[in-house]
Image 1 (tube, helix red, strand yellow):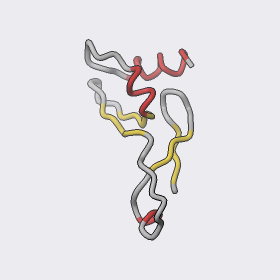
Image 2: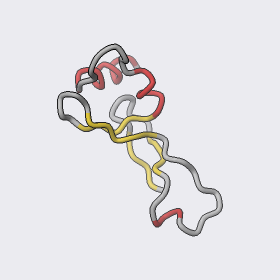
Image 3: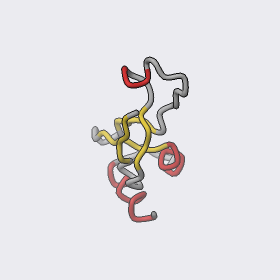
Length: 71
């Protein structure tokens, strides 16, 4: 199973699926998503960091940077 670091908190996140999980019975779901933000930047964020993003306006790279400062 592959892992990628969350751009918000830096935590290692499991990336499920693909060939690595093809023949395994203990499949795990992906622990985050690659998001394209309103300012055109792309960031991989874990589900906890996604939940902490503002939902009252368009999210930008500054919001992702703020997540890393909060943790």
